[in-house]
Length: 97
Image 1 (cartoon, helix red, strand yellow):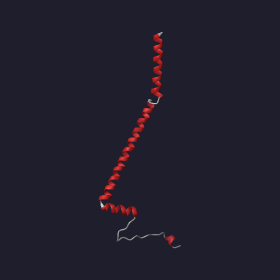
Image 2 (tube, helix red, strand yellow; image 1 turned 180 degrees about the vertical axis):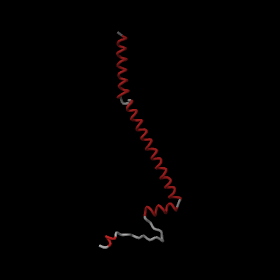
Image 3 (cartoon, helix red, strand yellow; image 1 turned 120 degrees about the horizontal axis):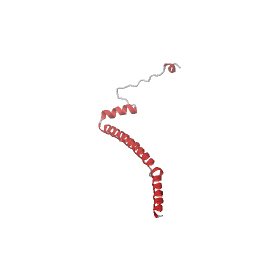
Image 4 (spheres, one colour; image 1 turned 90 degrees about the horizontal axis):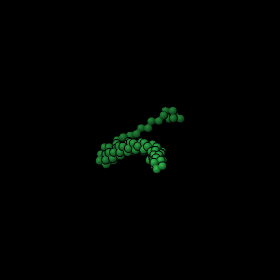
């Protein structure tokens, strides 16, 4: 009789543990999901590190390299050198009207 009770308790414990392993809060599927999320976050982290490095280089060049600074100003802010002239070309059909 005692062995039957122990067997039933062990079976119940086994069922409970099996349920927790397959469908519980800390289940195997949740573990796999978290591993995938971890891999995705590491990829994002690496991308952000590369972007941060590129921005750091750009800041350093803007502070220390005047040629680079002038080139950025000319391209981003459409600034001209003292000896440059801008020619605006219009569409000939619009100019005749």
